[in-house]
Image (cartoon, rainbow, N blue to C red):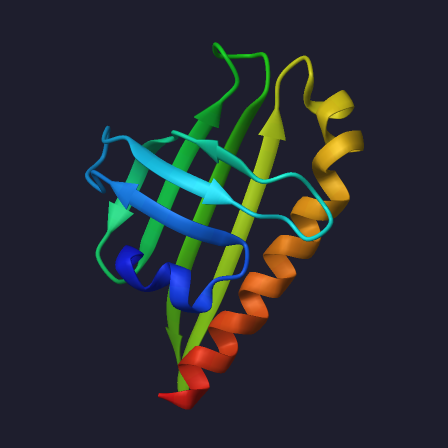
Length: 121
């Protein structure tokens, strides 16, 4: 539900584009304490209501790649949300020194906001 992101998501403040595998998205990240950025990842996995995985790259493959997964799994009495990010590439270590802490904080804020939204119905 990309259209609703600006209303509840404090980290990924906007996202739009083609959700099909191979499609391109345009996402705006607003990390707490950090500088906001817009990037255009490619959809790797899309299963309606279950999983969205995208791959974002800096310039070309192998420089700084981020593979992000958002997954919902059913469980007794509700569901479980799993969010993963894996950064790779020759600049991954260096880039994480600059953006790692703010990115992690952003993911935690997003997870908390999603929990509140889900529990509110």
